[in-house]
Length: 114
Image (cartoon, rainbow, N blue to C red; front, side, top):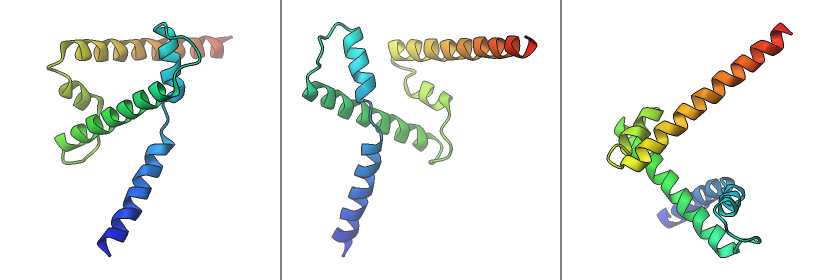
C-alpha cells in the first residue's frame, strides 16, 4: 500500500516539475552565447533538467535555513556567499532589478502627470 502512495506522490511531483519549463529561456541563452539554431533538443532538455535540479536544491536549502518557513532573497545570498562569482552576480541582478523598478515607477508617475 505504501508503494501505491509513493507512486502517486511521484506522479504529483513530476507533474509539478513538468509545469515549470525553462526551454524557451535556455534556447534564447544558447543563441546569445553563439549556438546555432536550431538547437540540439537533447542539449536543451539536459540543461533544463540541470536547471530544475539546481532551483529545487537551492530552494530546499534556503527553506531548511528557517525550518521551511518563508524563503527570502537574503537566504539565497547566504547560500552563495562562499562563491564570489555567484554572490557578485546575484547582487548585480538585484541592483538591476531595483533600478528597473525605479525606472518603471518614474515612467508611471510621468504618465500620471501627463
